[in-house]
Amino acid sequence: MSTPHVKTCSLVLLFLSCFHISAQEQNASAGFKVEEVVTDLTFPWSVAFLSNNQMLVTERGGTLRHVVNKTVSKPIAGIPDDLYVKGQGGLLDVVLHPQYRQNGWIYLSYSSGTDSNNTLKVIRAKLRDNQLVEKQDIFEVLPYRDTPVHYGAKMVFIEDNSLLITSGDGFDYREDAQRDNNQMGKILRVLDDGSIPLDNPYIGETEKNLSAAVFTKGHRNPQGLVYDLNRNKVFSHEHGPAGGDEINIIKMGKNYGWPIITYGKDYSGATISPFKSYPGMEQPLVDWTPSVAPSGMAVYYGSLFPQMRGDLLVSTLKTKEILWIKMRGDKVVEQQSLFADLGYRFRDIKVHPDGSLYLLVDSAEGKILRVTPQIN
Ligand SMILES: [Ca+2]
Image (cartoon, rainbow, N blue to C red; front, top):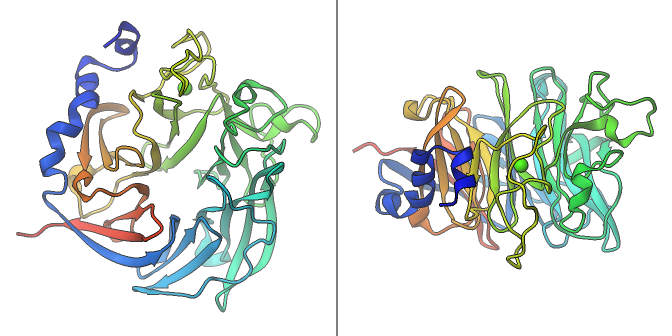
């Protein structure tokens, strides 16, 4: 427990983040009923609920499926033909337009290109007869890169109907997270048609300025992104290197520090930066050292688990659990490990309109679990 740690989390939180796993392990699923809703999925990556009994599911290998009750469709036709599936890349997030019921727009993020020249793209389309129609290009992250990892790729609509998109640093391009006129290692903001909002913080003077789409900078590989309507705040989390995974409250125009400040080290054990704080750079709300590998996040306002109201729920790959981040106001008061006894790598967590939790199991034998209260 080094001194710099104490600067960002209270002693209570530090204790919990270090020991919550062993303390809670036996009871990781007590009080919860876990059922399999969909099986036979291959590396499911994200879900979007079209209604109470219908959802869309992406599989990273390049399929989008429509699930009605528990029946899974054949792959939906019309996936972009420039899809690049390798490493962490492929078909990634799916989100709905806030007025989906009126306009039918479905947004998809995916990696596009080749080994030597690829990037993250976003399209929107409508679903008709198990086919994507009226496809429109919404965004492509520039510049292209030659690594198949750290795409970010999460999307969320915020209160003004603009769309936030997380963009990772490509692993080999960490310095780009601080670089102007560059969209890697950033959270980007566009309007629903892909155009640039005029109030973006680095709008600049010309359309050629790649900073114009930038909402926040200094990110590594952000894969959790939620808009909390009740707090009117955006929460994100990102993978650190060895240690240094973070949750941040995302505010327009702020710098989240990577790679100038971090609580993590390089995988080799080498120091990335001597700095854990720096003037003008934001401190994380939560630092996970050692890493948990946070993969997805939800904020809970459903009716089935009143004890979770206003709390964050984080899926993890490395520690194979759901972390229940208990909040008081905007502060974290406790973290509790859930579902570690199941032994799954969790790719994402979503709150269904009925208040149940949907957990995506990251596996070649992937599945979707539904969690409701255990009635004894
Ligand atoms: Ca940071």
